[in-house]
Image (cartoon, rainbow, N blue to C red; front, side, top):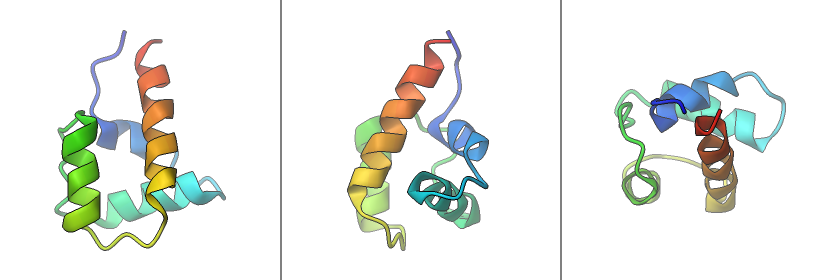
Length: 73
């Protein structure tokens, strides 16, 4: 089982040509993103209130599910 933050996982999908890749790029560009956080509620709250993200939250939800699966291996 891995011990990595959501930010670290997001970096692994940067460059993909889909919504998840776009979100990962936005996260990378956001200097204030909570880089060491792994809690869904904390990250979701940040994206909703602090970030300037233009993609639907469903993209984040889906990427976070991928993150949880990725942690298992």
